Amino acid sequence: MEIGANCRVLDQPRFLCAAKGFQIPREPSSIFPNASFYKPPRNFDCKAILKDFQVPMEKIKWLVKLSEIPEIIEVPRFSEDASSFLQGLIDNFCEDDALEIKNIEKVTNHDVKAVEYFLKQRCQSHPEISKVLEFFHFSCTSEDINNLAHGLMLKESLENVVLPFMDKLTNAISTMAKDNACIPMLCRTHGQPASPSTLGKEMAIFAVRLSRERLEVSKVKIMGKFAGAVGNYNAHLVAYPNVNWPKVAEEFVNSLGLSFNPYVTQIETHDYMAKLFFTIVRYNNILIDFDRDIWGYISLGYFKQITKAGEIGSSTMPHKVNPIDFENSEGNLGVANGALAQLSEKLPISRWQRDLTDSTVLRNMGVGLGHSLLAYKSTLQGISKLQVNETRINDDLDQSWEVLAEPIQTVMRRYGVPEPYEKLKELTRGKTVTKESIRRFIEGLELPNEGKTILLNLTPHSYVGAAVELAKDVDMALNLVNRGELF
Image 1: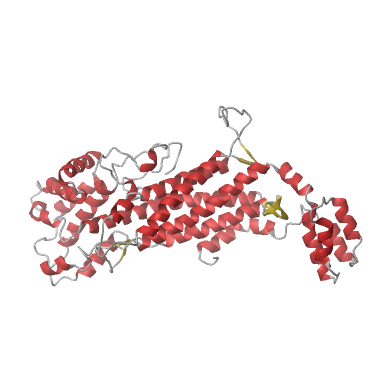
Image 2: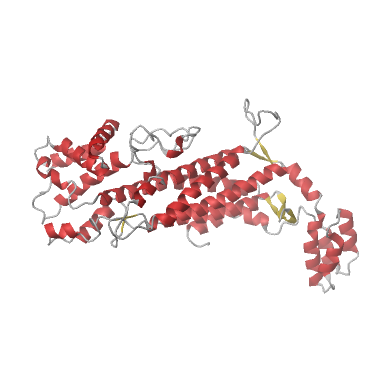
Protein backbone atom coordinates (compact mmCIF):
# COMPACT_ATOMS: atom_id res chain seq x y z
CA MET A 1 0.00 0.00 0.00
CA GLU A 2 1.74 3.11 -1.20
CA ILE A 3 1.55 6.16 -3.33
CA GLY A 4 4.65 5.96 -5.46
CA ALA A 5 5.86 7.89 -8.46
CA ASN A 6 2.79 6.87 -10.40
CA CYS A 7 0.36 7.69 -7.61
CA ARG A 8 0.04 4.01 -6.72
CA VAL A 9 -2.64 4.12 -4.07
CA LEU A 10 -3.56 0.50 -3.63
CA ASP A 11 -1.89 -2.86 -3.74
CA GLN A 12 -4.89 -4.24 -1.91
CA PRO A 13 -7.82 -6.53 -2.69
CA ARG A 14 -10.25 -5.26 -5.26
CA PHE A 15 -12.64 -3.58 -2.88
CA LEU A 16 -10.03 -1.37 -1.17
CA CYS A 17 -10.62 1.76 -3.19
CA ALA A 18 -10.13 5.36 -2.13
CA ALA A 19 -13.79 6.29 -2.44
CA LYS A 20 -16.89 5.77 -4.52
CA GLY A 21 -15.78 8.90 -6.30
CA PHE A 22 -13.46 6.55 -8.15
CA GLN A 23 -16.42 4.44 -9.23
CA ILE A 24 -16.72 3.00 -12.70
CA PRO A 25 -17.52 5.73 -15.18
CA ARG A 26 -19.42 4.96 -18.37
CA GLU A 27 -16.45 2.99 -19.67
CA PRO A 28 -14.84 0.62 -17.16
CA SER A 29 -11.35 1.31 -18.50
CA SER A 30 -11.64 4.98 -17.64
CA ILE A 31 -9.71 6.46 -14.74
CA PHE A 32 -10.59 8.76 -11.88
CA PRO A 33 -10.83 12.53 -12.38
CA ASN A 34 -7.44 13.55 -11.04
CA ALA A 35 -5.55 11.19 -13.34
CA SER A 36 -5.14 13.67 -16.18
CA PHE A 37 -1.71 14.57 -14.80
CA TYR A 38 -1.01 11.81 -12.29
CA LYS A 39 -0.97 8.31 -13.67
CA PRO A 40 -3.67 6.03 -12.27
CA PRO A 41 -2.59 3.63 -9.55
CA ARG A 42 -2.22 -0.06 -10.21
CA ASN A 43 -5.44 -2.00 -9.54
CA PHE A 44 -7.23 1.31 -9.71
CA ASP A 45 -8.46 1.59 -13.29
CA CYS A 46 -12.07 1.70 -12.14
CA LYS A 47 -12.67 -2.00 -12.83
CA ALA A 48 -12.90 -2.98 -9.20
CA ILE A 49 -14.93 -0.33 -7.56
CA LEU A 50 -18.55 0.24 -6.66
CA LYS A 51 -20.78 -1.47 -9.16
CA ASP A 52 -18.49 -4.34 -10.04
CA PHE A 53 -17.73 -5.64 -6.57
CA GLN A 54 -19.49 -3.97 -3.68
CA VAL A 55 -22.95 -4.03 -5.25
CA PRO A 56 -22.89 -7.71 -6.29
CA MET A 57 -21.51 -8.59 -2.87
CA GLU A 58 -24.32 -6.71 -1.11
CA LYS A 59 -27.05 -8.23 -3.26
CA ILE A 60 -25.72 -11.74 -2.68
CA LYS A 61 -25.46 -11.16 1.06
CA TRP A 62 -28.98 -9.71 1.12
CA LEU A 63 -30.31 -12.83 -0.58
CA VAL A 64 -28.51 -14.98 2.00
CA LYS A 65 -29.94 -12.81 4.80
CA LEU A 66 -33.48 -13.31 3.47
CA SER A 67 -32.92 -17.08 3.44
CA GLU A 68 -32.22 -16.93 7.17
CA ILE A 69 -35.59 -15.32 8.03
CA PRO A 70 -38.07 -18.10 8.94
CA GLU A 71 -41.13 -16.10 7.89
CA ILE A 72 -39.87 -15.83 4.30
CA ILE A 73 -40.64 -19.40 3.31
CA GLU A 74 -40.24 -18.56 -0.38
CA VAL A 75 -36.48 -18.28 0.20
CA PRO A 76 -35.52 -21.35 2.21
CA ARG A 77 -32.13 -21.59 3.87
CA PHE A 78 -29.53 -22.40 1.24
CA SER A 79 -27.74 -25.71 1.10
CA GLU A 80 -23.98 -25.88 1.46
CA ASP A 81 -23.68 -26.22 -2.31
CA ALA A 82 -25.79 -23.12 -2.98
CA SER A 83 -23.96 -21.10 -0.34
CA SER A 84 -20.63 -22.11 -1.85
CA PHE A 85 -21.85 -21.10 -5.32
CA LEU A 86 -22.88 -17.65 -4.12
CA GLN A 87 -19.64 -17.12 -2.23
CA GLY A 88 -17.76 -18.09 -5.38
CA LEU A 89 -19.45 -15.24 -7.25
CA ILE A 90 -17.94 -12.86 -4.71
CA ASP A 91 -14.51 -14.48 -4.43
CA ASN A 92 -14.01 -14.94 -8.17
CA PHE A 93 -15.34 -11.62 -9.36
CA CYS A 94 -13.03 -10.31 -12.09
CA GLU A 95 -12.61 -7.56 -14.65
CA ASP A 96 -14.48 -9.56 -17.28
CA ASP A 97 -17.48 -9.59 -14.94
CA ALA A 98 -17.22 -5.82 -14.63
CA LEU A 99 -17.21 -5.45 -18.41
CA GLU A 100 -20.24 -7.70 -18.65
CA ILE A 101 -22.11 -5.53 -16.16
CA LYS A 102 -21.18 -2.42 -18.13
CA ASN A 103 -22.47 -3.99 -21.32
CA ILE A 104 -25.77 -4.77 -19.61
CA GLU A 105 -25.92 -1.20 -18.33
CA LYS A 106 -25.63 0.09 -21.90
CA VAL A 107 -29.07 -1.43 -22.43
CA THR A 108 -30.69 -0.77 -19.03
CA ASN A 109 -29.12 2.67 -18.51
CA HIS A 110 -29.33 1.79 -14.81
CA ASP A 111 -26.30 0.66 -12.89
CA VAL A 112 -27.83 -1.29 -10.00
CA LYS A 113 -30.39 -2.98 -12.24
CA ALA A 114 -27.55 -4.08 -14.50
CA VAL A 115 -25.95 -5.83 -11.53
CA GLU A 116 -29.24 -7.54 -10.69
CA TYR A 117 -29.54 -8.87 -14.25
CA PHE A 118 -25.92 -10.00 -14.18
CA LEU A 119 -26.51 -12.03 -11.01
CA LYS A 120 -29.70 -13.54 -12.38
CA GLN A 121 -27.85 -14.67 -15.48
CA ARG A 122 -25.04 -16.21 -13.46
CA CYS A 123 -27.43 -18.04 -11.12
CA GLN A 124 -29.90 -19.37 -13.68
CA SER A 125 -27.89 -22.56 -14.01
CA HIS A 126 -28.07 -23.38 -10.30
CA PRO A 127 -31.26 -25.36 -9.60
CA GLU A 128 -31.70 -24.06 -6.06
CA ILE A 129 -30.83 -20.38 -6.52
CA SER A 130 -32.68 -20.10 -9.83
CA LYS A 131 -35.94 -20.43 -7.92
CA VAL A 132 -35.36 -17.24 -5.92
CA LEU A 133 -33.77 -14.91 -8.48
CA GLU A 134 -36.38 -12.18 -7.91
CA PHE A 135 -35.25 -11.84 -4.31
CA PHE A 136 -31.84 -10.41 -5.21
CA HIS A 137 -33.43 -6.95 -5.18
CA PHE A 138 -36.31 -7.68 -2.80
CA SER A 139 -37.82 -4.45 -1.37
CA CYS A 140 -34.65 -2.55 -2.23
CA THR A 141 -34.32 0.88 -3.67
CA SER A 142 -31.11 1.45 -5.59
CA GLU A 143 -29.92 3.78 -2.86
CA ASP A 144 -30.18 0.94 -0.33
CA ILE A 145 -27.42 -0.68 -2.34
CA ASN A 146 -25.37 2.37 -3.27
CA ASN A 147 -25.23 3.94 0.19
CA LEU A 148 -23.77 0.75 1.62
CA ALA A 149 -21.22 0.61 -1.20
CA HIS A 150 -20.23 4.20 -0.45
CA GLY A 151 -19.89 3.38 3.22
CA LEU A 152 -17.95 0.17 2.71
CA MET A 153 -15.46 1.79 0.39
CA LEU A 154 -15.01 4.82 2.60
CA LYS A 155 -14.45 2.51 5.57
CA GLU A 156 -11.93 0.34 3.73
CA SER A 157 -10.12 3.30 2.18
CA LEU A 158 -9.84 5.08 5.53
CA GLU A 159 -8.62 2.02 7.38
CA ASN A 160 -6.26 0.75 4.70
CA VAL A 161 -5.05 3.87 2.89
CA VAL A 162 -5.87 7.29 4.35
CA LEU A 163 -5.26 6.68 8.05
CA PRO A 164 -2.02 4.74 7.46
CA PHE A 165 -0.70 7.67 5.40
CA MET A 166 -1.71 10.08 8.15
CA ASP A 167 0.20 7.88 10.58
CA LYS A 168 3.26 7.97 8.32
CA LEU A 169 3.15 11.76 8.35
CA THR A 170 2.81 11.91 12.13
CA ASN A 171 5.70 9.48 12.56
CA ALA A 172 7.93 11.35 10.13
CA ILE A 173 7.27 14.73 11.76
CA SER A 174 7.58 13.40 15.31
CA THR A 175 10.93 11.88 14.30
CA MET A 176 12.00 15.34 13.10
CA ALA A 177 10.93 16.69 16.49
CA LYS A 178 13.00 14.21 18.49
CA ASP A 179 16.04 14.33 16.21
CA ASN A 180 16.17 18.12 16.42
CA ALA A 181 14.95 18.60 19.99
CA CYS A 182 18.17 20.31 21.09
CA ILE A 183 18.80 22.52 18.06
CA PRO A 184 17.99 26.12 19.09
CA MET A 185 16.25 28.21 16.44
CA LEU A 186 15.16 31.81 16.15
CA CYS A 187 11.39 32.14 16.08
CA ARG A 188 9.58 34.72 14.03
CA THR A 189 6.29 36.39 14.85
CA HIS A 190 4.90 38.73 12.20
CA GLY A 191 8.00 37.73 10.25
CA GLN A 192 10.27 39.45 12.77
CA PRO A 193 12.80 37.92 15.21
CA ALA A 194 11.12 36.62 18.37
CA SER A 195 12.01 34.51 21.40
CA PRO A 196 13.93 31.37 20.36
CA SER A 197 12.63 27.82 20.40
CA THR A 198 14.14 24.61 19.14
CA LEU A 199 13.60 23.21 15.68
CA GLY A 200 12.35 20.00 17.24
CA LYS A 201 9.70 21.69 19.36
CA GLU A 202 8.28 23.50 16.33
CA MET A 203 7.99 20.16 14.55
CA ALA A 204 6.38 18.56 17.61
CA ILE A 205 3.55 21.09 17.41
CA PHE A 206 2.59 19.81 13.97
CA ALA A 207 2.85 16.16 14.99
CA VAL A 208 0.40 16.73 17.85
CA ARG A 209 -1.98 18.89 15.79
CA LEU A 210 -2.14 16.37 12.95
CA SER A 211 -2.54 13.50 15.41
CA ARG A 212 -5.59 15.18 16.98
CA GLU A 213 -7.37 15.48 13.64
CA ARG A 214 -6.34 12.00 12.61
CA LEU A 215 -8.06 10.72 15.75
CA GLU A 216 -11.20 12.64 14.87
CA VAL A 217 -11.19 11.15 11.36
CA SER A 218 -10.95 7.65 12.83
CA LYS A 219 -13.85 8.30 15.22
CA VAL A 220 -16.39 9.11 12.52
CA LYS A 221 -18.94 6.29 12.34
CA ILE A 222 -19.55 5.16 8.76
CA MET A 223 -23.30 4.69 8.47
CA GLY A 224 -25.72 2.81 6.26
CA LYS A 225 -29.44 2.47 5.64
CA PHE A 226 -31.53 -0.34 4.19
CA ALA A 227 -35.11 0.82 4.66
CA GLY A 228 -36.56 0.93 1.17
CA ALA A 229 -37.94 3.67 -1.03
CA VAL A 230 -38.56 6.36 1.60
CA GLY A 231 -37.13 4.82 4.76
CA ASN A 232 -40.33 3.24 6.18
CA TYR A 233 -40.11 -0.40 5.02
CA ASN A 234 -43.38 0.15 3.16
CA ALA A 235 -43.07 -2.68 0.65
CA HIS A 236 -41.40 -4.98 3.14
CA LEU A 237 -44.34 -4.81 5.55
CA VAL A 238 -46.94 -5.34 2.83
CA ALA A 239 -45.19 -8.50 1.64
CA TYR A 240 -44.23 -9.88 5.06
CA PRO A 241 -46.03 -7.98 7.83
CA ASN A 242 -44.84 -10.28 10.61
CA VAL A 243 -41.13 -9.70 10.03
CA ASN A 244 -39.33 -7.14 12.20
CA TRP A 245 -37.81 -5.33 9.23
CA PRO A 246 -36.04 -2.55 11.14
CA LYS A 247 -34.23 -5.24 13.15
CA VAL A 248 -33.42 -7.20 9.99
CA ALA A 249 -32.06 -4.06 8.31
CA GLU A 250 -29.95 -3.17 11.33
CA GLU A 251 -28.49 -6.68 11.50
CA PHE A 252 -27.72 -6.63 7.80
CA VAL A 253 -26.02 -3.22 7.86
CA ASN A 254 -24.04 -4.10 10.98
CA SER A 255 -22.96 -7.41 9.43
CA LEU A 256 -21.16 -5.38 6.76
CA GLY A 257 -19.21 -3.51 9.42
CA LEU A 258 -21.22 -0.29 9.18
CA SER A 259 -23.26 1.61 11.76
CA PHE A 260 -27.00 1.58 11.22
CA ASN A 261 -28.95 4.79 10.60
CA PRO A 262 -32.65 4.13 11.37
CA TYR A 263 -33.96 7.62 10.50
CA VAL A 264 -33.59 8.14 6.77
CA THR A 265 -35.47 9.04 3.61
CA GLN A 266 -34.72 7.27 0.36
CA ILE A 267 -31.08 8.07 0.99
CA GLU A 268 -28.77 7.82 3.94
CA THR A 269 -28.64 11.41 5.13
CA HIS A 270 -24.88 11.84 4.52
CA ASP A 271 -24.33 13.73 7.77
CA TYR A 272 -21.47 11.41 8.67
CA MET A 273 -19.84 12.17 5.32
CA ALA A 274 -20.04 15.90 5.98
CA LYS A 275 -18.41 15.38 9.36
CA LEU A 276 -15.74 13.12 7.90
CA PHE A 277 -14.83 15.41 5.02
CA PHE A 278 -14.77 18.56 7.14
CA THR A 279 -12.43 16.76 9.55
CA ILE A 280 -10.12 15.80 6.69
CA VAL A 281 -10.21 19.45 5.55
CA ARG A 282 -9.02 20.50 9.03
CA TYR A 283 -6.25 17.91 8.86
CA ASN A 284 -5.26 19.15 5.42
CA ASN A 285 -5.23 22.77 6.59
CA ILE A 286 -2.74 21.88 9.30
CA LEU A 287 -0.58 20.12 6.72
CA ILE A 288 -0.71 23.23 4.51
CA ASP A 289 0.56 25.18 7.50
CA PHE A 290 3.40 22.67 7.87
CA ASP A 291 4.23 22.78 4.15
CA ARG A 292 4.42 26.57 4.20
CA ASP A 293 6.56 26.65 7.33
CA ILE A 294 9.04 24.16 5.90
CA TRP A 295 9.05 26.11 2.63
CA GLY A 296 9.92 29.21 4.64
CA TYR A 297 12.66 27.47 6.62
CA ILE A 298 14.18 26.24 3.35
CA SER A 299 14.09 29.81 2.05
CA LEU A 300 15.90 30.99 5.19
CA GLY A 301 18.51 28.30 4.68
CA TYR A 302 17.58 26.40 7.84
CA PHE A 303 17.13 23.27 5.74
CA LYS A 304 19.11 22.06 2.77
CA GLN A 305 17.55 19.61 0.34
CA ILE A 306 19.34 16.44 -0.67
CA THR A 307 19.92 16.56 -4.40
CA LYS A 308 19.57 13.66 -6.79
CA ALA A 309 21.90 13.13 -9.72
CA GLY A 310 20.29 14.16 -12.98
CA GLU A 311 17.48 16.21 -11.46
CA ILE A 312 16.97 19.80 -12.64
CA GLY A 313 15.54 22.59 -10.49
CA SER A 314 15.15 25.25 -13.16
CA SER A 315 15.33 25.23 -16.94
CA THR A 316 17.42 28.40 -16.91
CA MET A 317 18.99 28.69 -13.44
CA PRO A 318 21.27 25.69 -12.89
CA HIS A 319 21.83 26.37 -9.18
CA LYS A 320 18.18 25.98 -8.16
CA VAL A 321 17.02 23.27 -5.76
CA ASN A 322 13.35 24.14 -5.41
CA PRO A 323 11.08 22.95 -2.56
CA ILE A 324 8.72 21.42 -5.09
CA ASP A 325 7.49 18.56 -2.88
CA PHE A 326 6.03 20.97 -0.34
CA GLU A 327 4.65 23.16 -3.11
CA ASN A 328 3.02 20.15 -4.79
CA SER A 329 1.57 19.11 -1.47
CA GLU A 330 0.13 22.55 -0.80
CA GLY A 331 -1.42 22.71 -4.26
CA ASN A 332 -2.99 19.27 -4.02
CA LEU A 333 -4.33 20.04 -0.56
CA GLY A 334 -6.02 23.14 -1.94
CA VAL A 335 -7.74 21.09 -4.64
CA ALA A 336 -8.67 18.41 -2.10
CA ASN A 337 -10.12 20.91 0.36
CA GLY A 338 -12.18 22.59 -2.33
CA ALA A 339 -13.78 19.28 -3.25
CA LEU A 340 -14.21 18.01 0.31
CA ALA A 341 -15.65 21.29 1.58
CA GLN A 342 -18.19 21.35 -1.23
CA LEU A 343 -19.17 17.76 -0.49
CA SER A 344 -19.55 18.59 3.20
CA GLU A 345 -21.81 21.54 2.46
CA LYS A 346 -23.92 19.90 -0.20
CA LEU A 347 -24.41 16.28 0.82
CA PRO A 348 -26.60 16.84 3.92
CA ILE A 349 -29.09 18.74 1.73
CA SER A 350 -31.63 16.83 -0.36
CA ARG A 351 -35.10 18.01 -1.43
CA TRP A 352 -37.92 16.28 0.42
CA GLN A 353 -37.34 12.53 0.44
CA ARG A 354 -34.57 12.63 -2.18
CA ASP A 355 -33.28 14.41 -5.24
CA LEU A 356 -30.46 13.30 -7.49
CA THR A 357 -27.98 16.07 -6.69
CA ASP A 358 -26.16 13.90 -4.18
CA SER A 359 -25.51 11.20 -6.78
CA THR A 360 -23.52 13.37 -9.15
CA VAL A 361 -21.67 15.01 -6.27
CA LEU A 362 -20.73 11.70 -4.67
CA ARG A 363 -18.91 10.72 -7.84
CA ASN A 364 -16.29 13.29 -6.89
CA MET A 365 -15.38 12.00 -3.44
CA GLY A 366 -12.31 10.54 -5.05
CA VAL A 367 -11.13 13.98 -6.12
CA GLY A 368 -10.87 15.12 -2.52
CA LEU A 369 -9.42 11.90 -1.17
CA GLY A 370 -7.15 11.32 -4.16
CA HIS A 371 -5.58 14.76 -4.07
CA SER A 372 -5.21 14.47 -0.29
CA LEU A 373 -3.24 11.26 -0.74
CA LEU A 374 -1.07 12.84 -3.43
CA ALA A 375 -0.32 15.67 -1.01
CA TYR A 376 0.55 13.32 1.85
CA LYS A 377 2.96 11.47 -0.43
CA SER A 378 4.58 14.73 -1.57
CA THR A 379 5.09 15.96 1.98
CA LEU A 380 6.64 12.65 3.02
CA GLN A 381 8.94 12.77 0.02
CA GLY A 382 9.93 16.33 0.86
CA ILE A 383 10.69 15.44 4.48
CA SER A 384 12.95 12.61 3.34
CA LYS A 385 15.13 15.14 1.45
CA LEU A 386 15.64 17.61 4.30
CA GLN A 387 19.00 18.23 5.95
CA VAL A 388 19.27 20.63 8.87
CA ASN A 389 21.74 23.49 8.30
CA GLU A 390 22.82 24.25 11.86
CA THR A 391 25.39 26.78 10.72
CA ARG A 392 22.74 28.96 9.14
CA ILE A 393 20.42 28.57 12.14
CA ASN A 394 23.22 29.56 14.53
CA ASP A 395 24.13 32.58 12.40
CA ASP A 396 20.61 33.91 12.78
CA LEU A 397 20.73 33.49 16.54
CA ASP A 398 24.13 35.19 16.74
CA GLN A 399 22.67 38.22 14.97
CA SER A 400 19.58 38.45 17.18
CA TRP A 401 20.66 39.43 20.69
CA GLU A 402 17.66 41.76 20.89
CA VAL A 403 15.46 38.72 21.68
CA LEU A 404 16.96 38.77 25.19
CA ALA A 405 15.03 41.96 25.91
CA GLU A 406 12.11 39.78 27.02
CA PRO A 407 13.89 37.79 29.77
CA ILE A 408 15.87 40.84 30.93
CA GLN A 409 12.79 42.99 31.50
CA THR A 410 11.02 40.02 33.14
CA VAL A 411 13.85 39.60 35.68
CA MET A 412 13.87 43.37 36.23
CA ARG A 413 10.18 43.16 37.14
CA ARG A 414 10.91 40.38 39.62
CA TYR A 415 13.41 42.54 41.48
CA GLY A 416 11.38 45.74 41.38
CA VAL A 417 13.41 47.72 38.85
CA PRO A 418 11.12 50.53 37.65
CA GLU A 419 9.92 50.78 34.03
CA PRO A 420 11.69 47.63 32.81
CA TYR A 421 9.74 47.41 29.55
CA GLU A 422 10.36 51.04 28.70
CA LYS A 423 14.10 50.76 29.41
CA LEU A 424 14.42 47.70 27.13
CA LYS A 425 12.35 49.37 24.45
CA GLU A 426 14.72 52.32 24.49
CA LEU A 427 17.68 49.95 24.16
CA THR A 428 16.40 47.63 21.44
CA ARG A 429 13.48 48.86 19.34
CA GLY A 430 14.63 49.61 15.82
CA LYS A 431 18.27 49.47 16.83
CA THR A 432 21.16 47.13 16.24
CA VAL A 433 21.70 45.10 19.40
CA THR A 434 24.91 43.18 20.02
CA LYS A 435 26.20 40.84 22.64
CA GLU A 436 28.33 43.67 24.02
CA SER A 437 25.51 46.21 24.24
CA ILE A 438 23.28 43.70 26.02
CA ARG A 439 26.02 42.84 28.51
CA ARG A 440 26.71 46.53 29.24
CA PHE A 441 23.02 47.08 29.91
CA ILE A 442 22.82 44.10 32.27
CA GLU A 443 25.93 45.09 34.17
CA GLY A 444 24.47 48.55 34.74
CA LEU A 445 21.28 47.21 36.34
CA GLU A 446 20.69 47.33 40.07
CA LEU A 447 20.05 43.61 40.52
CA PRO A 448 21.16 41.00 43.04
CA ASN A 449 24.21 39.06 41.93
CA GLU A 450 22.10 35.95 41.40
CA GLY A 451 19.77 37.66 38.96
CA LYS A 452 22.56 39.48 37.17
CA THR A 453 24.59 36.26 36.78
CA ILE A 454 21.62 34.46 35.24
CA LEU A 455 21.15 37.22 32.69
CA LEU A 456 24.86 37.50 31.85
CA ASN A 457 25.00 33.77 31.15
CA LEU A 458 21.95 33.92 28.91
CA THR A 459 22.40 33.79 25.11
CA PRO A 460 19.95 33.55 22.20
CA HIS A 461 21.08 29.91 21.91
CA SER A 462 20.22 29.02 25.51
CA TYR A 463 17.03 31.07 25.83
CA VAL A 464 14.68 28.31 24.67
CA GLY A 465 12.52 27.73 27.75
CA ALA A 466 11.04 24.24 27.90
CA ALA A 467 11.35 23.67 24.15
CA VAL A 468 13.86 20.83 24.45
CA GLU A 469 11.68 18.86 26.87
CA LEU A 470 8.52 19.50 24.83
CA ALA A 471 10.21 18.11 21.73
CA LYS A 472 11.65 15.08 23.49
CA ASP A 473 8.26 14.29 25.06
CA VAL A 474 6.39 14.33 21.75
CA ASP A 475 5.74 10.56 21.82
CA MET A 476 4.18 10.89 25.26
CA ALA A 477 1.97 13.70 23.96
CA LEU A 478 0.93 11.63 20.94
CA ASN A 479 -0.02 8.73 23.22
CA LEU A 480 -2.21 11.09 25.26
CA VAL A 481 -3.85 12.33 22.07
CA ASN A 482 -4.55 8.79 20.90
CA ARG A 483 -6.10 7.98 24.27
CA GLY A 484 -8.30 11.05 23.99
CA GLU A 485 -6.63 12.75 26.96
CA LEU A 486 -4.95 15.68 25.19
CA PHE A 487 -7.13 18.05 23.19
